[in-house]
Image (cartoon, rainbow, N blue to C red; front, side):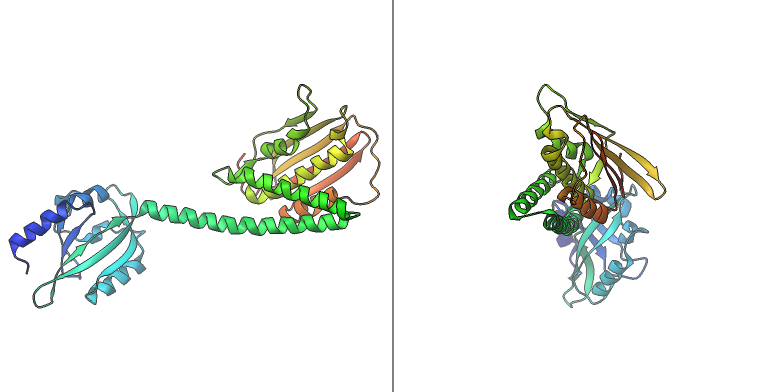
Length: 331
């Protein structure tokens, strides 16, 4: 056994340590081991004063959510007389939980027999939360890259199907990729990795509204779109704006554009309904071929996000009605 004066010196050193330290007796079977010393850092971490835990087992920190597998690994290492490392969920005195990382080392006498255990538990709750956030972001990045590549493929297919020549293909495809980059910039600027529907509309249309003269009318409630919806919706809005400046409302100073949206409950969940209406323009001629915009709406919105798209060539302008399922809506 360690002589008492030496133990007192050891306890004094432990007390001034910045890390939590527990010294327990050697027996492992219940009701042991018993706590012989707990320093002030342990009190700050757990809420227990030293006098409240002396003579009790460290098992008092365990609870219904403490993983049994981690405890079994700990017990196996200690029974083998080895240093033990691991992580588990512990419970403070007030019942709140924290993730603890422990390092438990045996103290031995001159004959090599274990006389005590010295444990250095460390609260790693914030570190684990940061790791979880990082893992979530990595999964989100993988998911977004997959969706983005699918969107690029759809844009490429639509461009090839609708273009009459290389110049038209290049113009349509590069414009779409630029729109994709803009949408991603909006998403990454937001900590929640989401963007408002109105924000996507404003990004797509703000270059075409004239100062001092309102030709574009936007009306609807706040709707937040997660990245998997924001990317294809942003692409579709960009293409509709591009089509309108070339052939429709935005190319004529006397024509106005209205975009109205709402969120409604459907049989399978909530739906974002939005209508793109071009008014006061010359009579609209039916297209002789399916253009890039129509191709994109069908391939990106319909196939990727399960939207229903209705395109009507009304006498005074184009009308597009879209209904998009909202898998995780926040309105």
